[in-house]
Image (tube, rainbow, N blue to C red; front, side, top):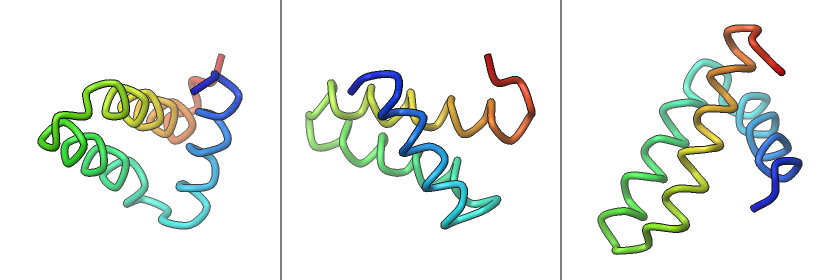
Length: 60
C-alpha cells in the first residue's frame, strides 16, 4: 500500500470511528498477523501509526 493510500485509510477510519480508529486498525493488524498474513498486517500497522499521528497533530 502506498503512502497516499495509507493516509486515505487512516483519515477514513478516523472520520468513521473517531477515538476508536487507532484500536480498530490495531485489531485488524493483529487479526491478519494471527492468520499468517504478515505483509497485510504490516500495512494496517502503518495505518494505525498514521491515525496516531493525525490524532496527535504530528503529521509530516
